[in-house]
Image (cartoon, rainbow, N blue to C red):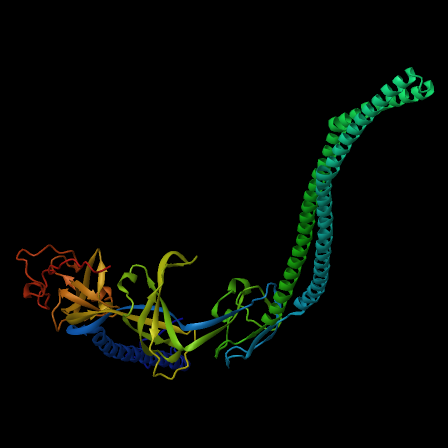
Amino acid sequence: MTPEITIPSTRCRPRQGPLSRPGRAVMRLVIALVVIAGLSVAALAYFNRSDSGNAEESALYTVRTMDFDITLTATGELRASRETVLRSRLETTVPIVEIVEEGITVEAGDLLVRLSDDEIRQRLENETLTLETARSELVSAENALEIQRSDNDSNLRASNLRLQLAEIGFEKWEKGEDEEQRKQLALNIEAAERELERLEEKYENSRMLLEANFLSRDQFKQDELALLRAKADLERARLRSDTYHQYEREMKRVELESEIREATAELDRVKRRNESEIASRLASVTNARQQVAIRQARVEKLEEQIAASVIRAPTAGLVVYATSLGRNSWRRENNPLGVGTQVSPNEEIIVLPNNEEMIAAVNIHESLVGQIQRGQPARVRIDARRGKTLEGVIDGVGVLAQTGGWRDPNLRQYEVRIRLNLADIDHDFKPSMRSEGEIIVGRVTNALAVPVEGIFFEDGVAFVYTPRDGRYAPVPVTIGRRSSIFAEITRGLSEGDRILLRQPRTNELWIDPATQRPAVARAPQPPADRTQPGDADDQTTSTETSRVPAVVTDATTD
């Protein structure tokens, strides 16, 4: 509540009003605070005015002729140009039982990782027993083959002998027995004929003697009976000869020829049987040998697996876990390797980079990759070494573009490899260090240039802000070649002009007298006199306040 103040009368002595002594003390305190606040505001305004003036001076850039490199800037990371990737060569997932500490330097032959081989050794014992069984079966099969070959030789010899005997028997009969039999039959017939002739003569003599009574009738009957026997003997001899020639001889021929055919057929069967049995035995031997080879290969493979469970450094290098490089992270979720970690077949475990030769792998947008060629110079800054800058050259560009992943699926970038010149540099650079590459794709000489942060774009028009009447007016410009730092100005500015390197505030914009509004950059019409860029008629000066000069539309403001 505001204290009430009574105005004293001129007729009498002032009375003590409602403002007591404590109230007057509070009033004095309020007045003092107000005075202090006012002095502070005044001082702050003074210093702000001074700082603003300094800031404005630092935000203005004087246009001048200069040389500058046209560069493309991209970020990436360091990589070893050569690295040895060590993977698990085991065929099963096994745990790590021993692993070297990450970050140390090892020599060739040093132990890096030892994987569990208990299961492999158990399998090796089983396969070794199976191999011995297979070898025993192979010996049995080879012995059976040799026995079969001996039996086959015996059977073949017996069959050949039977055939030879049949052929000899036929030849013996044809050239011996048959001839002898035919001659014997012919001889029997001839002997029977002669005996018959003799008995016929004797019979005639006996008959004559009987008629002359010189011979008894009994003797005559005996001679007659002998004659009858001789005729019968002759008939039997002839019949025997006919029977032999018509039946027995042909039967014997057929019989002997049949024996030859049977012996021949038996010989063929023996040969075929021998071939079949030998083939069967050979198949058994081959199968047994294959079993031995398979078991032997398995044993050797398991022995190789046991040897592969111990991973040693093939070359000297820095030990880097594959998980530290982001490899296999989809399976490990970036968990570091350690004793007990399960390692899958062919999984990367350790990388040994050769830090003597390193490259910087940076990503360049696909719209700019056409400007990059192998052998172009470049500069690389290492963030972890306080921005240390190294010289290098373009070593190559990736064949395929890389996408931005789920964060930016439309992004397409190419990996550009910059080989660093580390020949005479003692360094401790490591892979995956953050780096920024500056690729020099060209050089601009003797050109009017301004920093790129002082150039603005609106509706396809490039413009800068220049001081005018204590404010800043937009001046359209034509941009030529440019880098990530400077841009060449081919039209719109002159050497010595000053531009603002920031966006002016609303109260800092120059007011166009024609519109009484802040001036804006507009697309110009081509000049009637077709003056060349840089002529005096095309320049904006601090005294011109009635128009915006004409410019040529920039074709390189992509």
